[in-house]
Length: 87
Image 1 (cartoon, rainbow, N blue to C red):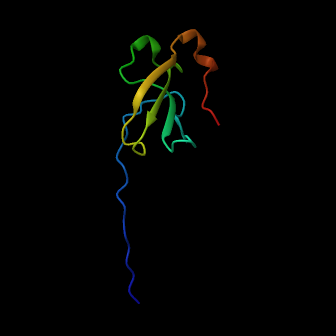
Image 2 (image 1 turned 60 degrees about the horizontal axis):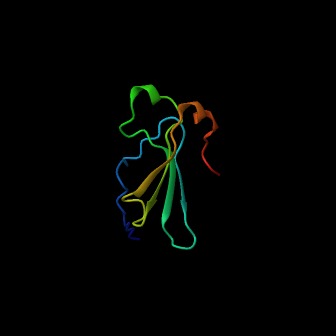
Image 3 (image 1 turned 90 degrees about the vertical axis):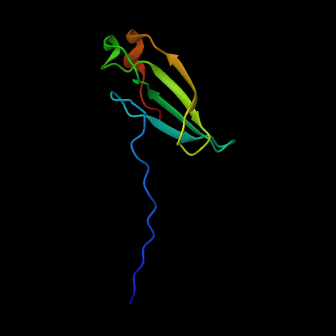
């Protein structure tokens, strides 16, 4: 008996930096695009490290390879304890 396998390369590390709480990704039913909600810590200043801020959202039209239309929904560190991953 001969066994064969087909391997699909896994994606490498992403540039999604959300160290305080997990990022959430869901598919938008109407378009099939992906929506990302996370605490965007890319390029964040030291005063905001360790906080759940800023609270951001982005869209991917290519299965998560790239993210566009990145928007900050809230960036007040005093509000950061209220942000959590959507379920």
